[in-house]
Image (cartoon, rainbow over all chains, first blue to last red):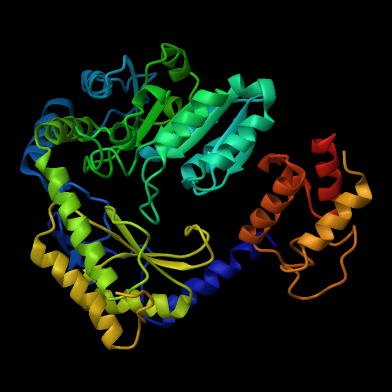
Amino acid sequence: MLFDKFQDMANFQAELAERDVKPFGAVTEQILSATEGIVEGRKVILAGTNNYLGLSYDPRCIRAAQDAAERWGTGTTGSRLANGSFAEHEALEQEIADFYGVENAIVFSTGYAATMGMCATLAGPGDTILLDADSHASIYAGVTLSGADIIRFKHNNPEDLAKRLRRLGDNTGRALIIAEGIYSMYGDIAPLREIAEVKREFGGYLFLDEAHSMGTLGATGRGAAQEAGVEDDVDFFAGTFSKSLGAIGGFCVSRHAEMEAIRFCIRSYIFTASSSPSVIASTRESLRIIQAEPELREKLWENAHRLYDGLKQLGLPVSPAASPVVALEMEDRSATIDCWKALLEAGVYVNLVVPPASPSNNYLLRNSVSAAHSTAQIDSIIAAYASLIDAGLAKPTLAA
Amino acid sequence: MTDYQETLSFLYSALQDPNKKDIELTEQTALVADIGLSSLEVMEFIEKIEDHFDISIPLNILPDVNTIGDLAEKVQELNS
């Protein structure tokens, strides 16, 4: 029957309801600051919001949004190709292009629309896409629509990428390589120097999704390619406004002049309404702030190291290196759900990640750190995890 | 180029570990419906095949692959 395929999900939801736990779609009833809110009736520290620089609640961004709403109204009521291109959108495109030092930029209504749309459009029948196995769902959705041959390379493995490019022989001129700066689940950083070397040796075009690395990495916050010193090897940078920039929307920038033709071929750009002017205005202000205030990145990384080191000292199974995303990987679904619930009760909201959203068959408690977290808040998060061990819900598995 | 029977033999051997139900493997055995491979196990199995035959198997062809025989034919095509 039509609905049979949803039965497993319905069963899982019923199990969660029976356990009185709501890890997916937990309702935030009130936002108190960039790092605190009322979630499911509890005052909690927000440690699962990707609000890396805390700008969602910055008074300057809020004021910019308010001013734009008064000037432009609440929405555009149309797509960029119809009536939805306001001066605000064009200004943001110019500013994001300038930020990356390239000539061409396209602004999208969401980050998902940006990566999905670009991946669906850049390569087509007769082309080959080589994507990292742990790529985001928006990338998988896009490449599936592209009509190109889709080949995965092993996660963060430049040697495997090289092997697969070699197999293409003389066809690498029609190859699109897709990687991410920081991978969203474990927070691991792509080996971009090595990936760039492989690209230089074999050819192809490199598309880099900086969704979690823009604002968090690089001397001026341009992301992982800037941090690795390989920006000239990247053909297309994509990213989102919904993480470090604290708003919603997405972008793709490129030095390739063909971007202006590509713009008119991207269905997720053409057939959806453009972002509200207030969203664009707050994004423009955030973009200005991340360039003017590098201390935000310094504080983010100080917090990331403090949380990572604290959880590691507890012996908890954290990901391999400190990052703005700190994930704990667990094998037991029921135990992970119990931990998520206990963390919420202890006043900490984190993300619960289950397969297939997690890159393996395991379960994740995913924490995202913010520059806006105080040291005391980071220590409270660590203390909440320590209480999981004390309660016998989580076991130390690493040598401290 | 590897002949079809050699390809089949490799597929059978590579499926020994994930064949937890220990069912008899034939060309008609369905990878998911019969053996019960998870999506992750399918991808790990594909990687083994790719490394062994030094080929890349596009994800696009997988919707047409249900059985071990289907996969052996695709490997033969890519290896030719």
